[in-house]
Amino acid sequence: MLSKLVKHSTLFLFALGLGLSSTALQGATIGVIGDSISTGAVTNGSLAFDVDRMHAVLTGKAPLGVDEATLEFLKAEGAQNASQVKRVDLSPREFVHPLVWMFNRFVLSLSNQYIDTVDNSWVSLFAKLRGGDQVYIAAKDGEKAMHAVQQVDRLLDGVPGEALDHLFVFFTGNDICAPYAELLTRPEDYQGDIEKAVRYYMKNAKPKASGDITHIWLVTPLNVSQLVTSKEIQEKRIFAFGKERSCKELQTDDFDKNLSMTASAEDNKDNLGLRPILTQVFQGGPYGLCPTLFAYQKDGSLETLKPVANALADFREKMGMLAKSLNEVNPSFRVQALSSASPIEFKSEDIANDCFHLSTKGQLRIAKALREEVEAKSQP
Image (cartoon, rainbow, N blue to C red; front, side):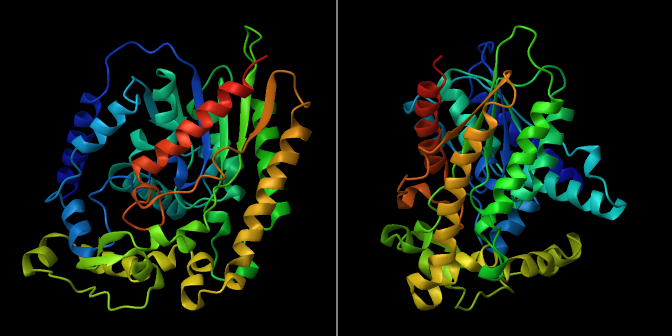
């Protein structure tokens, strides 16, 4: 089974590369730390909250092929230029226990091969819109601002030599997700963790011998609340748990999930209990990804959503304050806040099949907004 998974993932990555230009790259070096907004998580339309479909994907019976429609869309939008994207590995400094280390590497490998399509992430599309840059992604699905220093370590280890031309810090979703509102990331902790990571990078990254500065961009969080308040997003039709459903239904977590699906004796014999594992993973649905956000679906009260909305507003304010305070720390580094992505109102086509992440079209909207703002703020 493992050899099949490696084979199919290799073919997928090779095929995806065929859609890119072979022109030599002469662009900038770009790094990004953050969460799943920067990994291209669930942008592949073949993924779904469905045991049968994901079982077929993981066993190679339904490999994640190249989406020709997406490639044509990106070409029409001018996002087909050559760029190189590298997912940097975990840093040895993250080692705390052998089993934890093995599990984290397993999760990262699984994400790389099946969940994340880094070529469709906003940072990759940002590079393609610019004409082609070298992108290094240290962001990881599920991580929060508290992991920012660890992610900087990944960049320092994975991109040796001089400091990057651009470093983006973009934590937007997981910090507003918790079992209870009382457990949301506190704004002062959000600010403190990111400040510590930026200072850590400025202290340990080698300034450019040319004297050129490194731009550090603090990207303010998206308006995640619209995932549950937008009528268009709520009415989006997706395939989940064996049938077509609306995003609203999927987010409520109040329906029969039919987790047994259509397992065959051959499936259970050949795949080492993969279906039971998928059943455990999927039983919480999207609600399990972010209870504090999707709790709104239970009563439709803005009061329920208020802790999330307040946290997002506070995070944005903290990023602006932090950029001003850090910009004078080291003349080799210029720190600025980017706010153009925060007010984007997403359409149904911008949302992925799990009704939580963004589709490639949604990722491109972020890339376009940030590209324009970066160009304006990069002027001397």
